[in-house]
Amino acid sequence: SGPYSVTFLAGDTSATFNIPITDDVIYEGTETIDILIIETLLPAGVTAGTPNQAVVNIMDDDGINISFDLSTYNVDESDGPAQPTLVLSNPSSTDITVQVFTADGTATGGDYGSG
Image (cartoon, rainbow, N blue to C red; front, side, top):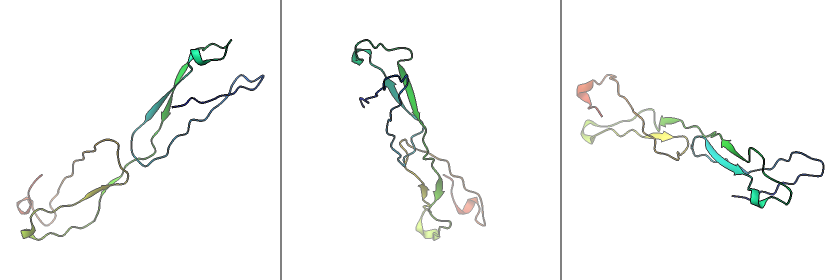
């Protein structure tokens, strides 16, 4: 997007500008913005030096926690499969696949099937 107007006051040799960053709740990992000086758009007498482009890394602060929606699920033997639900603390911009394991409690492998 842009352009961003950056003004150097007389006598200054540096100037800072703001690129607004959106704080969302979607896990995206690190994202990048390419920023560049376009030579043909500079005022007369000003040329682009090196580097004339840079990268802004947007570090994602939206880590994801995964959990069960309940701590106990009840199912009658005649009801069919138990259907526990997993929930994410934040949405993700990419698909997430996790492996969930079972371990015998008072029920043993003969009382339930494997995935």
